[in-house]
Structures are given as C-alpha cells and as structure tokens.
Image 1 (cartoon, helix red, strand yellow):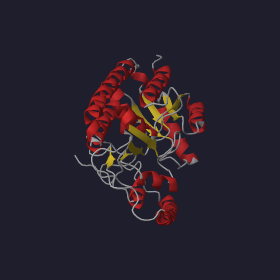
Image 2 (tube, helix red, strand yellow):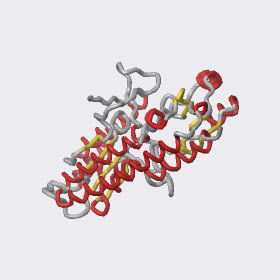
Image 3 (cartoon, helix red, strand yellow):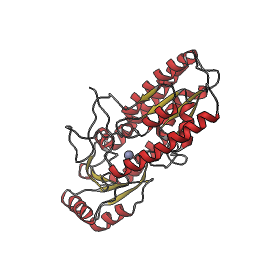
Image 4 (cartoon, rainbow, N blue to C red):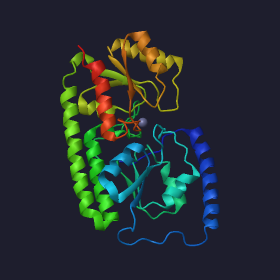
Amino acid sequence: MTVRSRKIPLPTRGIHRRAGLAALTLLLAIVAGACGQGGAPARSGSPAGPLRVVATTTILADLVAEVGGEHVQVESIVPKGGEVHTFDPRPSNIRRLAEADVVFLNGLGLDDWLGSLVTDSGTSAPVVRLGEDLPGVTYLSGESRKGGTVNPHLWLDVSYAEKYVERIGETLASADPANAADYRARAEAYGSTLADLDAGIRARMATIPAANRTVISFHDAFPYFAAAYGLTVDGTIVDAPGQDPSASQIGALVGVVRDKGVKAIFAEAQFNEALARTIADETGARVVSSLYTDSVGDAPQDTYVGMMRWNVDRVMEVLAAP
Ligand SMILES: [Zn+2]
C-alpha cells in the first residue's frame, strides 16, 4: 500500500517556520556566493572518503552507523534529546545537507520539515524516507484513515526497525558500490540482532498479566509498540508535542484512566513528567518513567538497542507485577 505523508497541521508554527526558512534560504544564497562557483565536484561511483550520511534523528543515525560501520560518517540533524516534531532547522543544517552523500528521513509527517532544507541545499544526494510505503500503518489518535495523519513512530516496534535496516543497507550499497557486500552483510547481521531483540521483548512482555495491559502515554508514540507487544493505549496527555492540554482535557483523561482501569502512564525522558504525575496522583495509576521514543539518550541508552532494552525494563517494572 502507498502512504502519503502529510504535514502536521500547526498553522502558527507553520508561519513561523516559513519565515525561518526564508531567512535560511537567503543565508544559503550568501554562503553559496561567498564560496564562488561550482561547489563540490559531482561524485561518480564510490566516494573517496567515508560516505557522508545525514539522518534526521539520533535513532535513525544509530541504525545507519550500525549498517555503515567504518565506511560512513553519520550525523543527526535533531540533536540527542531534541524534539523532532517541533524542530526548528538552523543554517548549519543546510550546509550539512549540501555536503551529504545520502540523506535519511523517517517520513510520515515526522520530519517533513527537512524537505525544504533539502531543496535549499541544492544537494543531489538520494533522500530516503525509511518509514514510508510499509504495511500496517495506523493513524494519530482521534484521526481516521480518511484524511487522518499517519502515526510515524514505527521504529518502536522492532520488526519495523528491521525493515528500516534493510532499506539502509540497500541505499548505502548503491551509494557506495565498492563496499556494497559489506553493507549488505552488516545489515543482515544487525537485522539478526534486532530479530533477537524483538523476540526477547515479546517473550518478556508476554508475562504481563492481562489486567495490566492498558496504559495511556504522554504523546502518541506507542501504537506500534503496543500492537506488537500486547498493550492497549487508551489515550494521550498531549495531542502533539508542544500542545499543552487544557484542564478539561486532563479531567477527561483522569475519567478514562478510572473508567478503563488504566494501569500505567507512559512518561518520556525528553518531556516533563509533571502532567503524568498529576494524573497518577488523581487516579492511583503508576508512572512508567523516562521512556525513550524519538531520540536516544546517554549511555547505555545511546543506541537503538540500548533504548529499547531500557524501555522494556521500565515497562516490566511497573506492568509485570500482579
Ligand atoms: Zn514522537
């Protein structure tokens, strides 16, 4: 099936972003002028040094680093702990794109702000949206398949991360043919690591008692995680990152937690946990703290595998007890 990504409808932020991009475009024109004509020579075949890869998030960058090994130099545009949904690009991001050999996005509305930067940078690097055109997507809470926005957080189901890794392997192999066999071998080996991780998570979470499988989350990051590992998400605290809920929305959510016997509230390392604590205090639900969703953290959560293990440890601490 084909999935068309859509921009997240945040009108005021969109206006702000357009103004920011206009300024960036102007600055790029100045930088390009100062550099004289030509720019980097066109590459043919494999690049001379490491393949220069830009990814939008630290999670995607880690997957690329695993597959690329010594052959790639990968950078994330959104820094560790940064917020991809509301990210404001900087002029330095355009320079990095202009120098890139390959660009990876998630797509599905998560990081589509990169599109205009890619255009402005003038890069001829392939731009690959790792999450697009994969089966089984769902829609952001409160939205429907008709006209709704696809939920982009596929990677929190490890089986989707395996699909990302396959795409990364094929993309790097065609961008750097001299090392193609190595990229494919590394993608296969890392894919096996992820398959083991997925099986391990399934086995652990299968032991959660049925009565403990209903949760709410801070932002709508967990539908694929929940579907893969047997949880039900019955609500979110914010409609989208950056959109604080009203008192009446919090009141309604407290009602949902009580009515549906929600066991836990998934709070996230990159967002303030105060609202989750407030709802927990009102209802007796427990908070699962410091989950990593859109960014890796500090060691040992500084890799995709590390953050998924951490997340499952936190979930099991709260949900596995009878
Ligand atoms: Zn998110």
